[in-house]
Image (cartoon, rainbow, N blue to C red; front, side, top):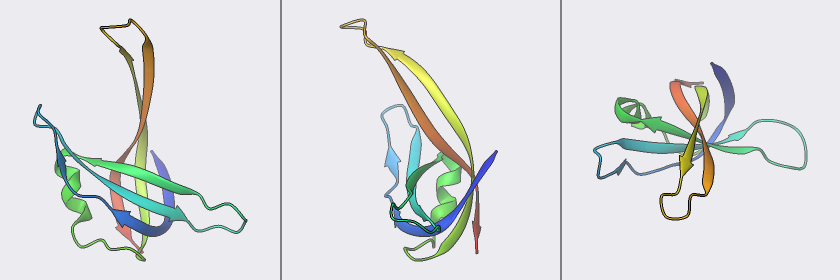
Length: 94
């Protein structure tokens, strides 16, 4: 598991898909020196989405996450695409 510390920039609405799958995104800006901000979106999936209740922009948080990837082949064109997600597993308010 990886960890990321920063300030919350935004909390997404709960998304529910036709399959019944749910997710909610958290956008965090890393606290670091430099000219280029490092802003990352984490996906809180299924029951983990409730962890974002009460989280607001400006809060300092630590996110524990895993890197998930998958391959998908478009059935119409046969073209292969790759997708990556940062799946949040833990959330700590700092």
